[in-house]
Length: 597
Image 1 (cartoon, rainbow, N blue to C red):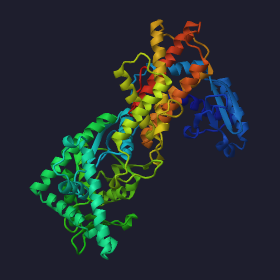
Image 2: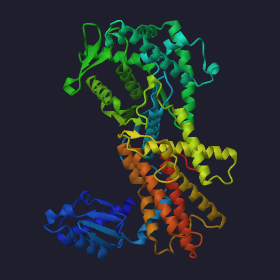
Image 3: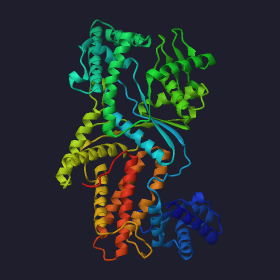
């Protein structure tokens, strides 16, 4: 369809030249889809040309439209609504577009001229707790952005930086050491990540009790938080870990091992994967080297207590701690090391960090610090900042144990999808195993689609019940549309109607057929824009638009009772191309589509 639009722009340029004697740059001839309530397929807004031409927008539209109908075979008609010139495209052009689409390989890359060597870092869990709803949005965003960038022909590496060390990890370890009594995931009958999370919450419980006790003794709150015995013990444990204390490191390896087994199970269940894992425990030392480098270059400075800082006030930021007085590292320390390791490994021209908008300042600091160090990859860093996920009950808090657990949420949406599907009676002929796979596909599709259809930058409210509906703007509605088309294609095969039939004898299209071809032709442009904006929401909206357009087509146009063999074959071929577009676009979101329901 890009060729059709280019031809129309060339024709429009000729129209302005011939009618008004004015050369209009192609960049100013912006075509957009015509609104559904007007006849036409493409619209040119004529308001911008009134000043230079000295004529009204309607007069310009009428004159240009008349010239196009008389001189451009692709344009069969037009109408002018105020300052909008709506162009009606000849059916032969739409058939040519369709023929080009079905000849295109399903995995043909969408050329964008964008970055070609990309690292997308997402998930980045802490090993002191299981994944929760916020992590799910992160994982689904990262996976989808990586797939969208791959679709542009880029080489993409999916990276996961595991935050496996630090004071928060020591909190879980300390609580386990004091209250665990040798408990294991096997003895407790729970996943390892959930076991670690249990002790993180337990630490917080006892820590708060100690703070209250100190406050009751007249200690100021901020002092009580610093001087509470459990906090002091956790800080001491971190120092021992960095000193490679055998007992502490042994406990750390044991608990992290349990957590990784739990994470792997969750990742497999939610359908995300990674090409490369980085661990903070392996990157923080390189980060410390970069801090030392900054001190030697004079771009960092030490305070009297021995802590290391960087002054970023000239960059509109603030002073930022890079190394504590006791020599232990902070988040930014390991981030400096990880950025360098990723560049050494992949020499990226774009490094995407999928991190919530609560870390906007932190990511600005990271780029600024790397720039001060003169690192060539500083400008390649891009923060895909996304909004938090809220529930009707409010914000989640890990330390209070009020998060929505990812594993439990997946189970709930799969069960909800099962009930919604059974109520509609959509599983005739499926075995018990096939039905279970379908429910998981629908539940996970519902969850992913609901979290991805919202622009990443927006904070969102998650409604589990709404997400699994088979109707409306949901994943299951699109999945069901694909299953319906698959059923049509199976029936066509049984009747010997092929999808590769010649279209040469067709001369006229139904309105919904034109609309379908135009929707299918938008795929490349949507993927290109989604890659540029790093927004899976654009692909999600496109998948919904295609499914909705097909449902209109299916309602208004007969397929198997159509007496004209050429029309019947075309409608089957159009259905097949629609199924491919839905499968491809949903695949970019990490969502599978069923062949039958």
